[in-house]
Amino acid sequence: METPSLSQTWNEFGFWANAKILPDWRALVALADEVVLKNYNHGTYSPDVARGIKDLCAQQKKPLWVHCYLQQGHDWNPKYLQALDRDERVSGVLLYEVVWNKAENDGLIRVEGDEVSWVFE
Image (cartoon, rainbow, N blue to C red):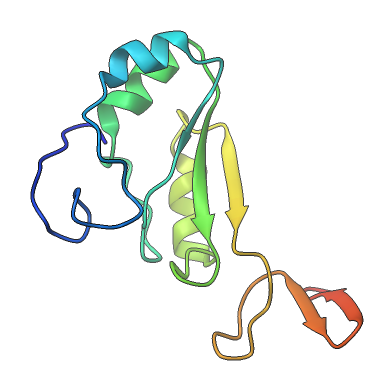
C-alpha cells in the first residue's frame, strides 16, 4: 500500500488479506526485479491507485503487473481491460481466480466432474 493507515476499514489494515506491516515501498521497488500490484478493483481499473508505485516502476524501467480478479472482483470486463491497456506503466495482467464457479458463473476454466475445459472456446 502506498499510503497505508492503521484503520479497520475494508481496503486498509483491517482487511484480513492486507499485510500488517508498514513497508518502505520505495525501497522495495528499488530491490525488486518486477512489481505486482494486488488490489481489489471491483471491476474498475483506476490509473490513480498506487500512482507513485506505478510511476517509480516506469522510471526504473521495471515490469509492473496488475491483478485481474475474475470471480470476487469481476475485473474481466471490457471497461477494466481497456483502462488497463491505456496505462503505459502496466506491463501486463495476472489472471486470478481462474476456475469457473457455478455460484459466480465466471472465470476462465470450467471444471465439471473429471472434465476440465476453457470457458471461452
